[in-house]
Amino acid sequence: KFLTLSLFVLVVAGAAVAQQDKLITHFMYDKMSLNPGKTGMDKDNMICATTIYRNQWDKVNGAPNSALLNVEANLAQISPWLSGIGISFFHDAIAFTRQNNLMLNYSYHLPIGNAGNLGIGVGIGMVNLGMNPEWIPPTTLNDASLPTAFSSTNLDLNFGLYWRGAQDYYVGISSTHLSESSLLNDENVLNETTYNTARHYYVMGGKTFRGLGTPKGDLETNVL
Image (cartoon, rainbow, N blue to C red; front, side, top):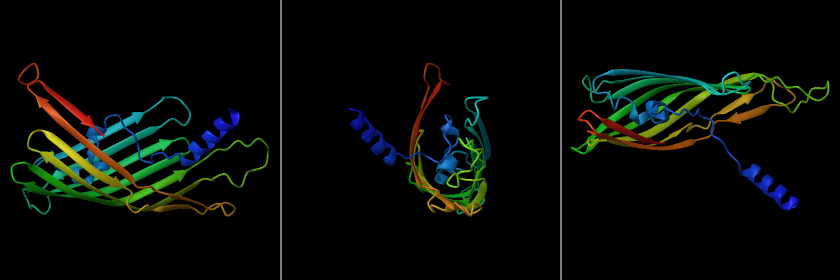
């Protein structure tokens, strides 16, 4: 039984993966950084700014800490080719690592009859990954295989499709980090390490049910 359990743990650990993007409970207010097709879709002829701050497990050493700022505008009144433009920035810190993403987003809004609008979006920007570890080895000798402090910046690309229906619902599909850029730690000559951004895939959807209980009573449902 011990050998079987050990083998199972090794197999699972070898196949395990985790997301690199931040996780925020209020994702329904952060659609643009996950799907650039949403840029400017919900705010006709308006400018909208959203900020979220998350401090998880307060006062725990290395606990996740995230902050983001999204600013988007619908400029279709000026030109249909401008449609939606926006800028998205988020900072995510967990344990030794610090990640910063800055994206410029563009979305072309394509009306589909009276059914709704399709947003075709692309985001281009940069991703920065920094690490400042404080290792406590069991001896006074340093382990050369352990990562050292570094900071690296590279290109970042996102793409998304976002459908806003006329009946108060939306559906989106997108992918972030399309370029799968390399973030090189070349400051440690004994242990040069390369970190890669992995492509993340998102599916989102939601609907607003209006007139529940009272004429102004609305219920919003969202899934990611």
